[in-house]
Image (cartoon, rainbow, N blue to C red; front, side, top):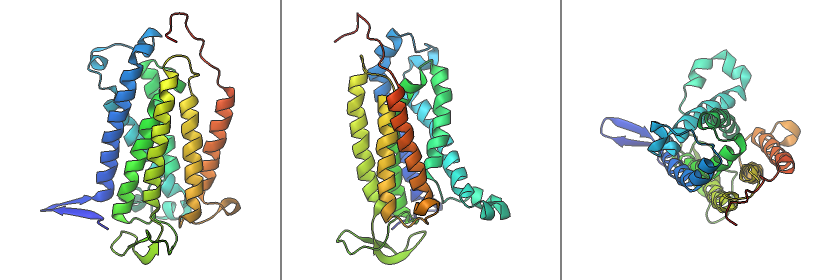
Length: 271
């Protein structure tokens, strides 16, 4: 694996490079979704027109703010998973280049998106629908960074022909293990496609919030299952912390799906 790229005097972590790539690609996806919904948003009086929004670069601004918030949340969640170690020597853990938790990133990004929804004047559920496919794409590409750096996000030993070893990884192993970052890349890209297709139904009359519920449920199920072959330690009821968080995500998605109501369809809305 290639934890770092050395370009003359520059040393670039491949994990950070792929996270940046993921944010950039997800910004394009979000912008495309924003553009296809723009007419409907404007018709319902959601968008607050301004000189900034007239340039139609909302996707890049949203991803920039939510991405940074997500990284901060992911870092904080990771270090607080081991509070004794964190409080014993917090600064090296806070500013390490390694160790980010998926659920913490979700929480950090979620808070930022709620504030951004208010800024753009779009109801929170519809805004979450808008951002869900892009979030899945960004996560998928970021996982390639985990693969390249060999940062310990791989799985348990396997004899399957596609097993990989990471002798030069940040967390090295010479055993052939499940390349779980590749599994997650493929699964999350599939989830992104499903959510994008669901978005076509919400442009007119579908209940707002359905895509976000799909995101919570599908990504929760995917992460819960992938944890069975990950090397993360077990804690609550024999589950990893990520599995516990995944169950919360799944249950929240189901409860929310049962509670949301269809948006009344305008008589002038296209069929």
